Length: 311
Image (cartoon, rainbow, N blue to C red; front, side):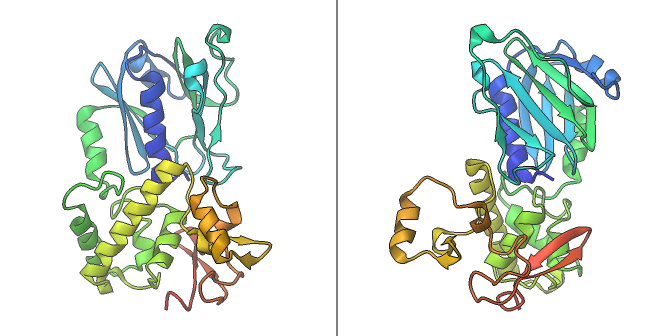
């Protein structure tokens, strides 16, 4: 499931390519025909995200609300204004790295292609198109209903309003469930998924099984700040990278100081198997202490942690 940084990038992308444009909205699959009819022919005013929820605001005071879930995906195409536009969602063949579509020359673009597969909704303008498939939620709602959706969600680290750190800390401390389970609860914090929860708990050296009620307020606030930091990095990078160059390896050997310094100056990303501390590294040695990384199922997703660093 795309995490909050990808949905934030998605909202920015919609604003860039469709903002201020009148859109043709259709449902080739047919499951969203009534909602598409309400939005068809109207202008996209703004695109925003809260956690994993995308809100596209139209000029008739209606909002297209989309939650991709595990199987949803957006794909894009169009003229040269779509250069750099990325397809986000399932199938996650490239993990947390988005696949980028090449925009065409302006005079070569002649309209969207025939829909392929079960396209729930197609948005099209004179410059390009966007297709949605397989989303958990796809609905046309009012502004009041949008506010109700937001009210059910916890604070978004990518918004990080004044008081959000304290709200997050109180959300954790008010529950006895393991902190690793609470980080996946979108009512506690919006936008964190399976990768971020494993990585930030390791970075803070927190036992994932620690009850939220046992977490000190100061530590909860530090956890919040780290989530804010790594998720903003994810927005900038287009993928989740939680390690630093000192932990990047080549042929199984840790980088030497000179290589570390060179990596810090480089704009290139680490190899995929160097991007995370513990996520999907069960059975491998911890990058810090060399203890074997463990994994277990928790709230329906696979949790990864180091039993030594996070004791």
